[in-house]
Length: 451
Image (cartoon, rainbow, N blue to C red; front, side, top):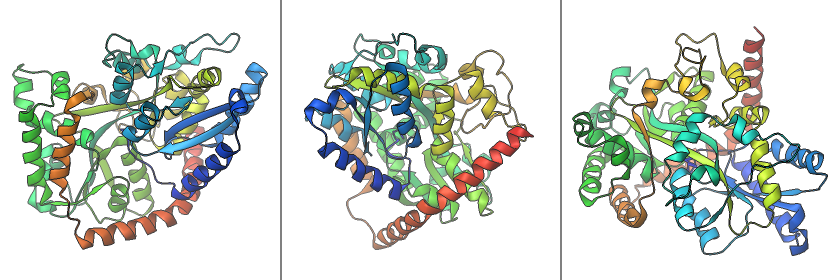
């Protein structure tokens, strides 16, 4: 995150809808007594990370499956660590939350998660039948101090970190290397995601590419590396790039790209999907690439915290989110890629109008070795092979945060504040406009599928 979420962090813009959701959640929360908790499901998720209509549908589906009433309280967070602090220190009784992979690691190590029982009686088990083997394999790599993450977490969305670029000003060759962040040609036309983990990993991979090629270190080992030496290497690279960077962004980078206010954005694949589609509507051509040196692949997943009060509804909700139709709707709503890998999802995502085919067999299995599918959402196998998963830095996290603060600096230039202010105003307006665009895009997709 999104979030990557998350990451993230996140990756999303429907501000008006978000404010209304927060207000509604507060109203419901204040009206809920302790006695109501057995009929209440408290969900804590990233902002703009779900088709919120499915929340109402879940309530109806849960009644059909169990004969019991449940009311959803849906609350939002923007930073993994804030969510974690509420659970760890405040002992908040959320029933379902959606952390990123490194936070899942930390939660497992700190004994903050409950195992997810897959016995749903007569209700199908969508979790075990629909989640991609690739996601399951990645979750097996989560370091849970002896606990298998697949017993405690179910994949929700995933993606890569790469470069979103304007093809009119940036060539494919330039976007193929992280060194483009030092190219004077793009002075003050670069935005970098304000997410230190998502930046640190790819840049360290770039700086240690020769050592990786010589077999002295593996990609996975690089993703664990938070030594003083490596932190200093990344800091030096970023400080040089800083002279060319227009800003560090959490949400507005993709907007700057669609407006051609920036030519390069170090960002998440989900943001890239949104920006590419939005830009196309106004005649701007953007593309996304994971540099050849390598990058990180991130994952967000559903978990049940140890302080949850409605474990049954939480399990059923996670199972419900793994249905093919629900996964497709969430993807259409937010632009990110679901961990669900059923034939129904593959069929819906195939687009014969695309020129190039992708080897997505690592995700969908046999039969997907050459399919015309969005390569930003589903990278080719060769791209995935040069990506590695992020991990929790443990006690070294503070040193990485200090490095990030030094790179960004404490003084914000006035023009940056002006840009941010204008951007927030545009986001407010576009929040309304995007609903209209989403409906139009959905209609176009349906038209292509029918053809």
